[in-house]
Image (cartoon, rainbow, N blue to C red; front, side):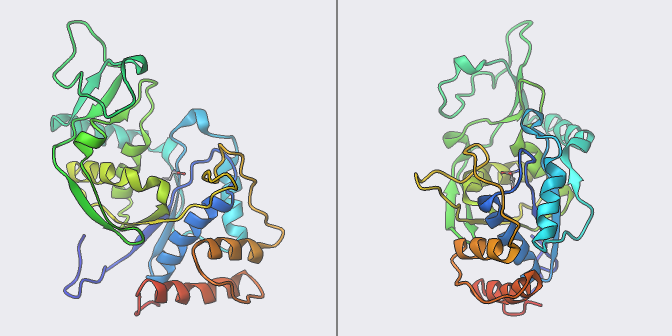
Length: 290
Ligand code: GLU
């Protein structure tokens, strides 16, 4: 990270990166709110990226619906949104770069051949005569990776032994989330990733990839998830109801409380954000926040 003499980040670029597999719900709003507050508290930019790369999961119209939900809650992005489905040539170029550096290999393993643990590296040393690759994997360099998460504290993971060589391009030909998220964070010059704690475990993989692509990995903050009564993450797969926008302030206050803050009186969404940003800045020691 390019930091000035004081250690301050000279510019801040955050992003919210929803997958358009359905409308936002209370759980996804918590992640959106945290990333929005952090960007505003830093006087930085907040970008919207529609992660529609996993086409079988994309629901028609969900992208525009999500954008409408964000606008209704007063969360406005600072640059035109990007859609991953329109950036395939950028992913191909980054893939070629890794391939030229000897960092990727074709893998012919089928799901049935794998046990579910870390990938054992079966295809690392090449495929047999005439064997076609199904997927493409990253040759993960050895070593433990440590980083500080701004919410969760110090973290470390040995990607090579705990995860193994992970997939960049899937057997169905689609680019993997782990890969495109890193390419995009790099190209969009994202300095700060703020998202749900379910993605904490992906961070070391993403940092590994970022470095192999010659990028400086962004700082990270992983915020708590909302769980349903049975302790499961609130998610589209678990049929979480979409955001209630009949009372936007009440919906914002619910996400705010999920982030551990006390509710405060706000007559409308503008007043909510005006008051929430300095609270966030104070909580996270951003004294000079604008
Ligand atoms: N698209 C991912 C999701 O909706 C989030 C990606 C990210 O923030 O890194 O879960």
